[in-house]
Image 1: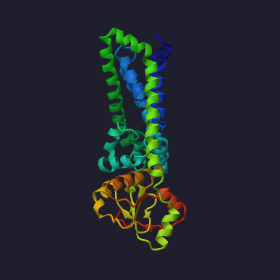
Image 2: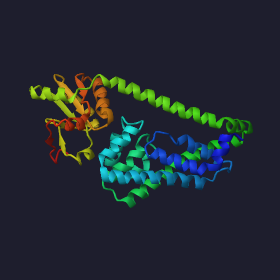
Image 3: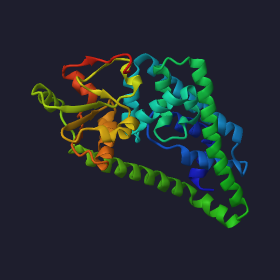
Image 4: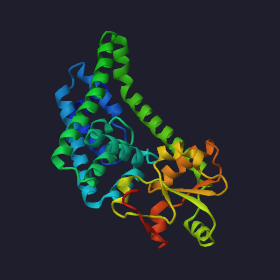
Amino acid sequence: MPVALNFFLKYGYWILFLWVMVEQLGVPIPSAPLLLTAGTLTSTHKMNLPLVLLAILAGSLISDSAWYLMGKRYGGAVVKLLCRLSMESNTCVRRTEDYFAKQGVKALIVAKFLPGLGTVAAPIAGQTGMKYKLFAVYDAIGIMLWGLSLTLGGRFFGDVLKHHPNAFAWVTRFGFALFVVLLMSFFVWRFFRQRAFLKEIRMARVAPGELKQMLDRGQPVYIVDLRHPLDYLPDPRTLPGAILLSPDKLVEHCAEIPRDRDVVLFCTCPSEATAAKMALTIRRLGVYRVRPLLGGFDEWKRLGYPLVAIEPTAA
């Protein structure tokens, strides 16, 4: 038996517990290949399925609870930190906030199945003031469904291999090498995808100082605040003249956006990701004078530039 497989069989439950816990703490090391491997080994009775699920539940629930408490205490700052660690930072804040707005606590059940959302769901739950007992119950349900789907998928693969002894022997011999190759391929693919996205938007951004000069000169600018309503909680203000629109509403009302002036979009996502993504989207719909605001709302506020209160009805 290969040394790597023997080591995994000896310490498999602890490896699962620590790997899942570290991933859910925000380190971008995907645990799905490991869960599939554990599921495959349960088909040969070399690992126990209930203990595998218990290790997954314990590791994930500990991490999620820690982020829940951090989110409850520090709010949106924790979410932004996690999204900078996440390899899905360009969408994770917006998508998770939207799920919470539409589904409430039920969003925790599906969060683990969506890349980049599983970790940020916990601090957003804390930020919204959700009771911990309610959070723990729904989070545990989501963890178990996620863990069970992956381990049962691996178990099905193991059952198929048992009927083909030669294939099972090959997988036993080269399984660890295959796992490493798949893991490295995952990182390479994510890296180049993120790099291509950032390269596309880098040249299009407008600096806060440039936007302020435009406003001081009385130049007409169509400013759109793309932040989620949860982002208004710590500071219910926005840029002068900004219109509050969700990304979906922005696309829906794209025909109403003036074409004779600059359009500036801003958010609070890392690297202005939501604003940049929407800038690319509405450019394809015919709005060419559109640019994301460099640094978003946080940079504008840090520089001490003017802000106005958001009307409660608008929020």
